[in-house]
Image: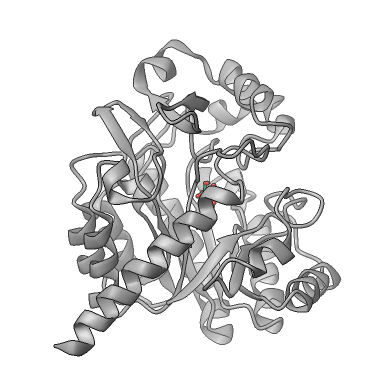
Length: 357
Ligand code: DNO
């Protein structure tokens, strides 16, 4: 595996490449052209400049998170092919730039959803948190403004303020899209992009829906073992793969995370590893990465990745806000660096034990 950190790019991220370079064991970044909109073709010069900047800092681009999928593709509208053609062109240009991993999601309208961006914990740190009651009490438009006014000035992925203007239209677009339609739109998209992925060996890694159940009446399908295996089979190509995000699948306590990892052997191309602390099944917060701070056994998650031969990039995920850092919620430097060191420690121990026999 390659330990990485997500980096939003100069001008968007409070964390610098030189800081990332100093986290022991982190050799690459997962990045994107954060200023691009879903549906646009990425400019070759922009890709090249991003790559040059990362490499000049002594790091590599281990993958792109995300090339976002336009809602026309997810909703399956008649004009979707225009956007799929653009997506294919972006993939081709990434392949030409020797980039071989793309993370994306197929969540209608929103990306991941939290109801609190700074819940204070006993140790004084603040964390992202979720309660179902808060989602049930809010309409999506209010949710947009709350997310944007509490994000320390950062633009939260999937919650870009310009999308707010279109929330009603977007909901309208999905009014006839149920789970089956979403599956079939995903299949259509994958079948169209697979040839370019094969040509350039680009591994597509779908990110799970977070939380892993429908919210605001919108369908959500990448939520559990049954559905993700269905997706792997419906387009049975190694380039159709998975981002295994423990914090997203883990929102549903019925998901057995190590078992899911084992059942996805060979198709996990990217891993986001983080812990959650549950107070009840629909009230949880994003704790520190350590097993002892949350609900999951992080050793078992890492062991399942190790034992299935996972060799892709891995990254710590949302961190707590600690030591007075001001950054995009979940994406500060300090706690993610602690997370990377911890995950590297687990991996080293698992590896040495395995080799000892
Ligand atoms: C949250 C992230 C997601 C993820 C997208 C992938 O912090 O894990 O925003 O990047 O869903 O497209």
